[in-house]
Length: 187
Image (tube, rainbow, N blue to C red):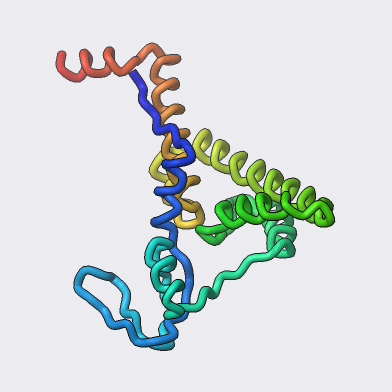
Protein backbone atom coordinates (compact mmCIF):
# COMPACT_ATOMS: atom_id res chain seq x y z
CA UNK A 1 0.00 0.00 0.00
CA UNK A 2 1.33 3.40 -0.97
CA UNK A 3 1.14 6.04 1.74
CA UNK A 4 1.74 9.64 0.80
CA UNK A 5 1.95 12.61 3.10
CA UNK A 6 -1.17 14.74 2.94
CA UNK A 7 -0.80 18.15 4.50
CA UNK A 8 -3.57 19.93 6.28
CA UNK A 9 -3.46 23.51 7.57
CA UNK A 10 -1.81 22.46 10.83
CA UNK A 11 0.96 20.65 8.94
CA UNK A 12 1.45 23.70 6.73
CA UNK A 13 1.91 25.86 9.83
CA UNK A 14 4.60 23.46 11.07
CA UNK A 15 6.38 23.54 7.71
CA UNK A 16 6.24 27.33 7.71
CA UNK A 17 8.03 27.47 11.06
CA UNK A 18 11.16 25.91 9.52
CA UNK A 19 11.12 28.17 6.46
CA UNK A 20 14.13 30.44 6.43
CA UNK A 21 13.95 34.22 6.35
CA UNK A 22 16.80 36.50 5.26
CA UNK A 23 17.50 38.99 8.07
CA UNK A 24 20.11 41.46 9.26
CA UNK A 25 20.99 41.28 12.95
CA UNK A 26 20.49 44.67 14.65
CA UNK A 27 22.15 43.86 18.00
CA UNK A 28 24.76 41.31 19.07
CA UNK A 29 22.90 38.24 20.20
CA UNK A 30 25.82 35.83 20.10
CA UNK A 31 26.08 32.27 18.92
CA UNK A 32 25.76 28.82 20.35
CA UNK A 33 26.87 25.30 19.51
CA UNK A 34 23.18 24.49 19.25
CA UNK A 35 22.56 27.17 16.62
CA UNK A 36 24.13 27.19 13.18
CA UNK A 37 24.02 30.99 13.01
CA UNK A 38 26.31 33.66 14.38
CA UNK A 39 23.88 36.33 15.48
CA UNK A 40 26.27 39.26 15.47
CA UNK A 41 25.26 42.85 14.74
CA UNK A 42 25.38 43.58 11.03
CA UNK A 43 25.47 39.93 9.92
CA UNK A 44 23.01 38.93 7.23
CA UNK A 45 21.76 35.39 7.88
CA UNK A 46 18.84 33.14 7.05
CA UNK A 47 17.03 32.05 10.19
CA UNK A 48 13.93 29.91 10.63
CA UNK A 49 10.59 31.65 10.94
CA UNK A 50 10.12 30.50 14.53
CA UNK A 51 13.33 32.29 15.55
CA UNK A 52 12.42 35.37 13.50
CA UNK A 53 9.13 35.68 15.39
CA UNK A 54 10.98 35.73 18.71
CA UNK A 55 13.75 38.12 17.62
CA UNK A 56 11.43 40.47 15.72
CA UNK A 57 9.26 40.99 18.83
CA UNK A 58 12.40 42.14 20.62
CA UNK A 59 13.44 44.36 17.68
CA UNK A 60 16.73 42.46 17.26
CA UNK A 61 16.46 41.70 13.52
CA UNK A 62 15.34 43.37 10.31
CA UNK A 63 13.77 41.27 7.56
CA UNK A 64 15.49 41.69 4.18
CA UNK A 65 12.99 39.85 2.00
CA UNK A 66 10.05 42.19 1.77
CA UNK A 67 7.57 41.23 -0.90
CA UNK A 68 4.86 43.24 -2.56
CA UNK A 69 2.31 42.76 -5.32
CA UNK A 70 4.79 43.97 -7.97
CA UNK A 71 7.06 41.10 -6.95
CA UNK A 72 4.24 38.64 -7.70
CA UNK A 73 3.75 40.23 -11.14
CA UNK A 74 7.43 39.96 -12.00
CA UNK A 75 7.61 36.42 -10.67
CA UNK A 76 4.76 35.33 -12.97
CA UNK A 77 6.72 36.53 -16.01
CA UNK A 78 9.96 35.00 -14.79
CA UNK A 79 8.32 31.66 -13.95
CA UNK A 80 6.54 31.43 -17.30
CA UNK A 81 9.72 32.14 -19.26
CA UNK A 82 11.94 29.66 -17.38
CA UNK A 83 12.18 25.93 -18.07
CA UNK A 84 12.95 25.14 -14.44
CA UNK A 85 11.30 26.56 -11.34
CA UNK A 86 12.91 29.90 -10.52
CA UNK A 87 14.45 30.55 -7.14
CA UNK A 88 11.77 31.94 -4.83
CA UNK A 89 11.65 33.00 -1.23
CA UNK A 90 10.64 30.23 1.14
CA UNK A 91 8.03 32.63 2.47
CA UNK A 92 6.38 33.39 -0.88
CA UNK A 93 3.29 31.22 -0.51
CA UNK A 94 2.75 32.09 3.15
CA UNK A 95 3.14 35.79 2.33
CA UNK A 96 0.76 35.51 -0.65
CA UNK A 97 -1.89 33.73 1.45
CA UNK A 98 -1.63 36.33 4.19
CA UNK A 99 -1.72 39.21 1.70
CA UNK A 100 -4.78 37.82 -0.07
CA UNK A 101 -6.58 37.31 3.25
CA UNK A 102 -5.69 40.85 4.32
CA UNK A 103 -6.86 42.37 1.01
CA UNK A 104 -10.26 40.71 1.50
CA UNK A 105 -10.84 43.16 4.35
CA UNK A 106 -10.59 46.17 2.04
CA UNK A 107 -13.35 46.33 -0.60
CA UNK A 108 -11.67 49.35 -2.18
CA UNK A 109 -8.67 47.11 -2.99
CA UNK A 110 -10.71 44.50 -4.89
CA UNK A 111 -8.65 44.99 -8.06
CA UNK A 112 -5.41 44.29 -6.17
CA UNK A 113 -7.02 41.25 -4.54
CA UNK A 114 -8.05 39.80 -7.91
CA UNK A 115 -4.62 40.52 -9.41
CA UNK A 116 -2.89 38.80 -6.45
CA UNK A 117 -5.15 35.73 -6.78
CA UNK A 118 -4.55 35.49 -10.53
CA UNK A 119 -0.79 35.94 -10.12
CA UNK A 120 -0.62 33.31 -7.38
CA UNK A 121 -2.65 30.86 -9.50
CA UNK A 122 -0.38 31.50 -12.50
CA UNK A 123 2.75 30.94 -10.40
CA UNK A 124 1.34 27.75 -8.88
CA UNK A 125 0.21 26.40 -12.25
CA UNK A 126 3.61 27.06 -13.83
CA UNK A 127 5.60 25.61 -10.93
CA UNK A 128 3.39 22.54 -10.44
CA UNK A 129 3.53 21.83 -14.17
CA UNK A 130 7.32 21.89 -14.01
CA UNK A 131 7.36 19.57 -11.00
CA UNK A 132 5.20 17.00 -12.79
CA UNK A 133 7.22 17.34 -16.01
CA UNK A 134 10.57 16.84 -14.30
CA UNK A 135 9.27 13.99 -12.17
CA UNK A 136 7.89 12.24 -15.28
CA UNK A 137 10.75 12.65 -17.71
CA UNK A 138 13.84 12.50 -15.53
CA UNK A 139 15.09 9.80 -13.21
CA UNK A 140 14.14 10.58 -9.61
CA UNK A 141 17.69 11.37 -8.50
CA UNK A 142 18.40 13.53 -11.55
CA UNK A 143 15.12 15.40 -11.22
CA UNK A 144 15.60 16.05 -7.51
CA UNK A 145 19.20 17.20 -8.03
CA UNK A 146 18.26 19.56 -10.86
CA UNK A 147 16.19 21.94 -8.82
CA UNK A 148 15.54 20.85 -5.26
CA UNK A 149 17.36 24.00 -4.11
CA UNK A 150 14.75 26.09 -5.96
CA UNK A 151 11.78 24.57 -4.12
CA UNK A 152 10.34 25.71 -0.85
CA UNK A 153 9.58 23.04 1.80
CA UNK A 154 5.97 22.49 0.68
CA UNK A 155 7.01 22.06 -2.95
CA UNK A 156 9.89 19.73 -2.05
CA UNK A 157 7.47 17.48 -0.17
CA UNK A 158 5.02 17.55 -3.07
CA UNK A 159 7.81 16.77 -5.54
CA UNK A 160 8.98 13.75 -3.53
CA UNK A 161 5.36 12.56 -3.35
CA UNK A 162 4.96 12.89 -7.13
CA UNK A 163 8.19 10.93 -7.68
CA UNK A 164 6.96 8.23 -5.31
CA UNK A 165 3.58 8.00 -7.03
CA UNK A 166 5.13 7.74 -10.49
CA UNK A 167 7.56 5.04 -9.35
CA UNK A 168 4.79 3.10 -7.59
CA UNK A 169 2.26 3.19 -10.43
CA UNK A 170 4.89 2.59 -13.11
CA UNK A 171 5.70 -0.65 -11.31
CA UNK A 172 2.03 -1.62 -11.12
CA UNK A 173 1.46 -0.85 -14.81
CA UNK A 174 4.51 -2.93 -15.75
CA UNK A 175 3.19 -5.78 -13.61
CA UNK A 176 5.88 -5.39 -10.99
CA UNK A 177 3.99 -4.38 -7.87
CA UNK A 178 5.70 -3.88 -4.52
CA UNK A 179 4.74 -7.41 -3.42
CA UNK A 180 6.04 -8.97 -6.66
CA UNK A 181 9.33 -7.08 -6.39
CA UNK A 182 9.87 -8.38 -2.86
CA UNK A 183 9.05 -11.93 -3.95
CA UNK A 184 11.45 -11.71 -6.92
CA UNK A 185 14.20 -10.22 -4.75
CA UNK A 186 13.95 -13.03 -2.18
CA UNK A 187 13.50 -15.85 -4.71
